[in-house]
Image 1: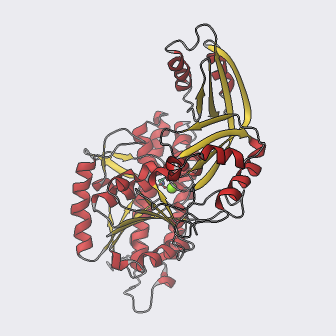
Image 2 (image 1 turned 180 degrees about the vertical axis):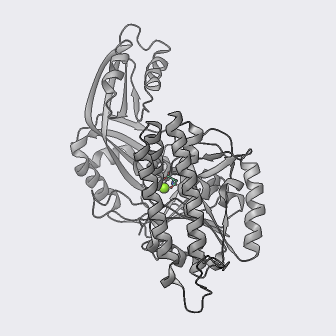
Amino acid sequence: MIVMKFGGTSVEDAVAIRRAADIVKARLADRPVVVVSAMAKVTDQLLAAGRAAANGDRDQALAISAGLRDRHLRTAAELLGPSQHSVGAPSKPSSGLGGGVPSPLQKLQSEFDVLFNRLDELLRGVVAVAELSPRTTDFVSGFGEVLNSIQVTAAFQAAGLDAGHIDSREVIVTDATHTRAVPDFEETEKRLQTRLKALLDQKRVPVMGGFIGATSEGVATTIGRGGSDFSAAIVGAALDAQRIEIWTDVDGMMTTDPNLCPGARRIKVISFNEAAELAYFGAKVLHPATIMPAVRKNIPVYILNSRNPSCEGTCITSQAPRSKNLFKAIAAKKRITIIDLVATRMLMAHGFLRDIFEVFDRHRIPVDVVSTSEVSVSVTVDTTDAIEAIAADLAKLADVQHEGHKAIVCIVGENIRMTPGVAGKVFGAIGDHNVRMISQGASEINITFVIEEDEVPAVVRRLHDTFFTEVDPEVFA
Ligand code: ASP
Ligand code: MG
């Protein structure tokens, strides 16, 4: 079997959902299990409704909910409305009065009505208590997947697929760490195997929502934003899938940002470790940590484009084949601030680094690149409004200077590990551009350095021209 996960933009409207149905149809022989996200932007809107309610803005909260109800009902009508019945389909028009069997559209509409009534009731409750707990947040934010998994199941059936809905809250069992709940893999695996195999054995196509689960007591949870990829990996690992397909709206991972470098190539195959290094820069595609369950079981994960399904995408594997190119990709991240710290009294007294990192921790600001000398430490952080406050706290420990408008450039490839003189080649290629910090991660598969923000296009192009003008056709398209 395989897992096919469709992200928000790949199920954003009726057209996209029909396209997904066609993509699934073409793979029926592989026995697909389908995992779907909420329709694009729905999760954000649900969370906004929850926040509005918590702030006492009842009208705003209910208006957002009404907008979502309208969008779902409209999409449902487009997918299942009278004009959608194929010739000969059992589309008994029913008024719903004379005890006639409700049409698939009527059934879906009434399910939506029940769910949206429940959501509205909940939002009113949040207004009343003026508080949105993590537990309630999960209940609200998970609605998008609940709704869309039901909708996609109905749409697939209308498209002639024998789809069967699985309620993820009955199979994905998690702890109660709301908004980023941790799955109980053992119990989840058991339930997935029982429920999914039953459908697969009948040659049916299970459809389930990503992102959502429930505690063993049945309290709704979510497993973190963007969590549908994680859901897909959990399902794939539980059923020993041949592969997991992440259907999105790009052709896959690229050697660099095509906006910076028109000559950017698609990466056909990349190792999990390489993809993980790039995640911080290209998180748009997928966060590799979320596919860990698949990687652990050696299941390849494909990034595919639902708007260009014939493109073979990018395959992420635990062990990518050796490439003739030294690197796999170059990534850059702008809006970086460097903070330079010089120890004042005791040169690097023990505890100095801990004290420094405690400051960042307290401000909840992640540190990216770190480099140290005997008397100084430089770190980079994403530029934020909090810089001044952080600097003030750090000034109690060290002489502090900070400078914005920097960028991190990261060049990644498993081959770095076994090639001598790589740093020389990289810094030779960028010529006389000034480099502020250099670091090579413990994984030894990346070289990371910090430059002036406005030099990013020039530096990335130079690197790309040097290392990707000729590419290994096995690894790059
Ligand atoms: N809908 C959820 C989110 O937007 C989960 C996902 O799409 O992966 O975070
Ligand atoms: Mg996503």
